[in-house]
Length: 325
Image 1 (cartoon, one colour):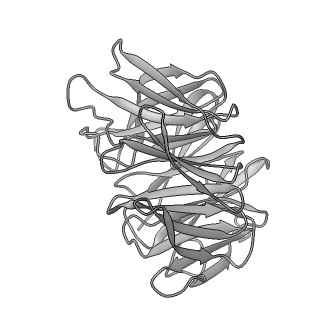
Image 2 (tube, rainbow, N blue to C red; image 1 turned 90 degrees about the vertical axis):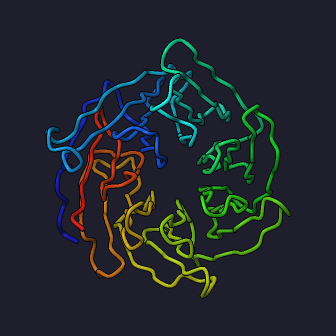
Image 3 (spheres, helix red, strand yellow; image 1 turned 30 degrees about the vertical axis):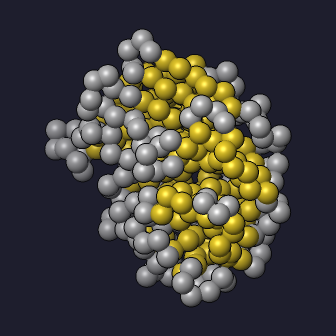
């Protein structure tokens, strides 16, 4: 692990420090991928095309669709599956969270209709957001206030799950829209049934703090997380304890994300705040990371919908890494 890491495959310059960045995991009806990134008082929404998808593109082509003013620094962001670029009027919809403990739902037709709905209820910092992935009519958020809350698009809080420690991640699976996965900082991941509002399964890291967890979209029995400086992976049909565990980062790890194209590929990042943040791409069949990327003070982590490519934000730039499969 002595390798300090390779530079990004592609970079896109930005006007400010990027705190969060998310590829839309949904089909927007466009050949290009929707991407949003957030800074101190704004969210930029645009589309990305890469040379791997289009011979005419040199590296990456980023097209800004709209810059949304945002009252505070954006701390997390989630895309709605309702966002479409192939119908008129076009629709962009996403939600954000900020330090004022509010969730904001932003909707735009990219012309002159723009709406912001503010949702209040959390009493502490919000760590992660997700939309219900089949229709996008609900959102879920987890917070340091030891709750996971489910909201409708009108801003009504429809369900509240009381947690035993801060909620760090929440995932909603497209094949199982009535189940929600919630990861807690003290090392527990629970699956909730939204119909009965009961916990139906729990997983245990065996250590804490759990910083980030993700549910594999290409194989629902796989769940991964980073806890301390390790990554851990479960097969939820086998045991509530991890099937595999490896040290990943010298310092504490920050993010865990599964690739959207390969069930054995995932990435982790070191905690931001250091001079340089390490991006590691791991393959379950390999003892060592298959790629080590180095980015100055990285923030956020997201995989492309159809390429083995991930993005992290940083100081006035987005950095993209392509992984050879």
